[in-house]
Amino acid sequence: MEALLFNVSGGFLEGIVRGYKAGLLTQNQYNNLTQCETIEDFRTQLSATDYGNFLANEPLPISTSTISDKATQLLVDQFNYLRSNAVEPLSKFLEYMTYAYMIDNVILIITGTLHGRNTNELLQRCHPLGIFDTMPALCVATNVEELYHTVLVETPLAPYFRDSVTAADLDDLNIEIIRNTLYKAYLEDFDAFCQSLGGPTAEIMHRILAFEADRRAINITINSFGTQLSKEQRAKLFPTIGRLFPEGNNALARADDIEQVRQACEPVAEYRAFFDSSGPGAGRVNGGAGGGSESTANLLGDLGVSDEFGGGAADLEDRFFVHEVHLNKLAFLQQFQYAVFYSYIKLKEQEIRSLTWIAECIAQNARDRIHDFIPTF
Amino acid sequence: YTYGLPTFVTVVIALYLAQLTCSGEAFNVGQFLEETSPYAWAATGIGLCIGLSVLGAGWGIFMTGASILGGGVRAPRIRTKNLISIIFCEVVAIYGLIIGIVYSARMSFVSPNLIYTRENYFTGYALFWGGLTMGVCNLLCGVSVGIAGSTAALADAADPNLFVKILIVEVFGSIMGLFGLIVGLLMISQASEFTAAVAPAVVSPFVR
Image (tube, rainbow over all chains, first blue to last red; front, side, top):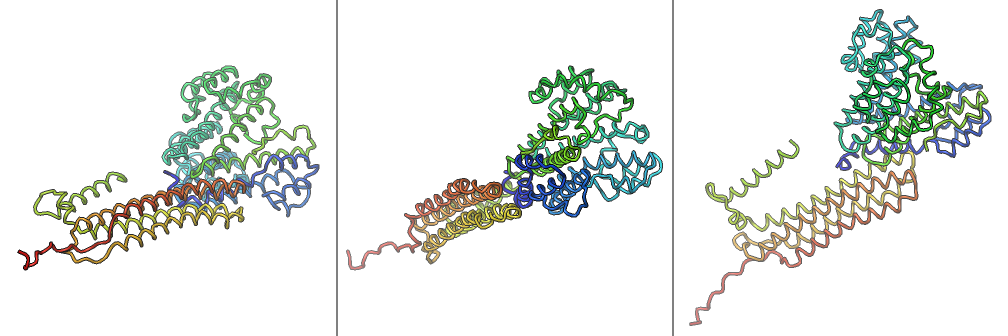
């Protein structure tokens, strides 16, 4: 039934986003990129793809962070084009997608402001997709009370703050706990919105968001081994929309080592496979995450580039990424639904991470690890 | 609201219409059927035929058109080839037009007191139900070709080999409109045009 009226407002944009998806790098192009000797070659190879001459005006030598920034800028331009042409309910859907980046930006600004950092520097480090109009207002606050009230009034994230975080919590420097509380509220809200849309959008988005929820639950559990995070606190951070809810979540809350995490994931076949043959990595996961960090600042780490050299934890992370890419590719098999927009942005981000990895390996001449990226097609 | 209200309103109006034709509060369907002019049935049938056909064709065209526009941004080569899908949808409207013309040829002028003959009743009903059949067939055909055409455009943008294969699906979809056309013509094959009632035979005064 959704096919009858979807094209009235979403037909053009669906065509556009599928066109964007056709421009994602294929295995062939990735192979060509891995064979590049220098960043110059890399740039030339990329100019033959949909990236075009995005690095044309950069002076040599080009740093990998420039490549990453420019590629992200391309993604942001595409996203803004989609957003400016969208009407309800697609515009609301796209807005929900930006909230994830907004949460990161708001946490960044709150931490920076409380430590007295420069406003401009903070604003520059924010992710472009998560920028909202009243963001600079957050930098003006001088103490925690003010910050909390500014956040409640000025940001689109107000409902997530209102329900779960109090002013006293903001003072407590457990910023990662706040980040995860906000993200949990966001995931559940997004899932509820998708369910209200109904049809294939609800189905596909629920699958993707449930995996995201389970992934965060597993990561929170593993990263909290050996830290001061109590089990009750840990349990409060798990989202409720995942496939591991409720028994798996309860088991994860009680887990003390990787073996119990594996048992908690037994009921779900796909997750069981993540822990298979990651035996040698398991020991390093514990040591890497717990050693030396007395605060929970490392709760999730940066789920991106910085995890490459992390060893066993990276193994599990890689499998999560592979499964996420698989779920996002599945979204393109159905027409007349909104999940293609979400999946495209995620796949593009994954591609940018892979590009940055390859560029890093070329720049640092670590050619033996150059194939450790995750290809999309 | 979406389903309950229109159904309720339709039922109330239908009951009122049936009632208005008779005196007082009697609900007499037979009298309603006998008293409604065959012109009413015939004209409604033709209106439904062309109206629903055009609705189906338009629906299909906007669905396919939006996807061609979206897909054509990155893959401009699909623009011309996919006009075939639009033509399939358009053909549905032409079927409705043909039937409209054929049916309206059966509507000739007869004065009101001579219109109520058995043949004319039949023609009236045949034109109404033939038109409705035709209209609904074409509506569903247009929608089906539209959805298939939209998918064909996006598939063609992704991989040019797919277009011809999906076109076959569209051809089968548009055959349904053709079926409607055939059945619509068959339904009125026995219906003669409106003819005036012949006065009962009067015996010649010279016959004893």
